[in-house]
Length: 606
Image 1 (tube, rainbow, N blue to C red):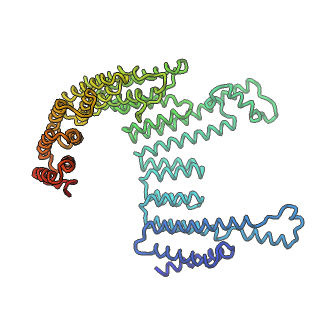
Image 2 (cartoon, one colour):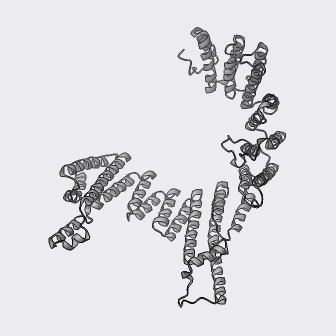
Image 3 (spheres, rainbow, N blue to C red):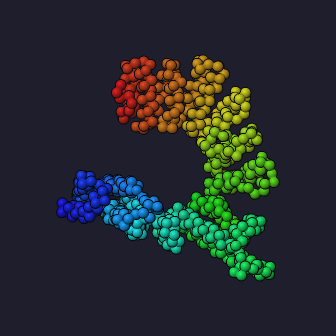
């Protein structure tokens, strides 16, 4: 190991001599550099070197090279440059000195030795850690930044070791396309990557983007050459203005204008040429689309991304492809709730026929189109998820404080009360179809609390209470979240009626009856929140708290050693500890211990 390290250090001698000869480093500094490099070389040669050893060595080499470059620039700036008048009066001796100074700062071994040494350390690191993708990407990025010729070799090695990593193929293709300006090589890399990773959505999307970018480059070139007549210009006025500003591009060699007949024939031929060119471009994109659909037939996300890309570019003769994508989506995903939700929300961004309407009418027209899509969806696909997506759409329209709110409707032109009946109808239809899930029911009850004006709060609270009671008595009698919401509404209703936070004996009795109905019915795992609410409510009512403890004892006996059971029993012990002291807490602990084998997590220290 020592011989190998010594050999590598001896190979640095020319570089170190050049640094000293140029005055970039002193002899003492170079001795420190050699010492540090020797330490790093020994770390790399040990039995099991770590990745951090290689990265630390690379970081040190980069810092030394950066310092060398800074000192070189500083010395060059400090060197006076003679003016032109001084040059006329220079002697032959001064000219020789300038030539010597110029020769002194010519490229030498120290200018590129640092980069080569970093590349060598990266090579050793990737040999030692072939499976580390982060290391490979660091290696590639360093080669790209330095513009080193080893880039292709490193990319080939990385892809050979990791052929199933889409990111490597895309990185290589992007470098060929953007840096090396080799479209054919980039296309070949993307096609090879798609053969190795056919199920990568990102690769299909990036391949489509690359082809569109290439078409845009060709488009810009044709505009610059004056070849584009039809497909790249939106109006004849713009075309005439552009040709007038660049009329020298259209002058003939003999400075004579073409006759109208000849000009017309040339325009027709040019239009045919342009049509053929863009038809070929659309054919390439259609081929990519069909290949993606064949590889990932069940990916809705991929098709939506492809459609978004097609909608974001102005490509002639692509409307047929957009219609084809939409038809395929409806044919393949009409059983998918997410497709209908996306299609309905897509109507809000449709600008067709909106220019002749004022803003409010245009927005309402888009809203009606979205509603028609949702209505068709719930007819064809009456599921809980479909109704939930429909309801979330309406909630986004009505309430601006939601994360998924639709900003199109949140201004002075619209009032939430305009849509109250429509959104309530969605929940009613879901209930009548038996598609009201637990989450949807909670949204239904919460909506009743929010709708209406502030002076209608008592009526809305009573309406929400009656609705929650009805839902809890039906198929959702085991819905813990709905029961929790109902309990909070009952407590709020009694507090509003009495105008005080304290309850009468009659109110406490009615609330305990409510908890006594639901707590034995639900498992302690589902009803953990209800247990904590009941403990907090009856903690200062001894009679009801003791009844609650008895109910908890029975529930804990069937809960086994679940974490929720431990949480509830620990909370009971904690309440008793605060209210009655350590003796009563220990007594309750022993009582719970008889019914549960596991040790209570948070009260064992008591």
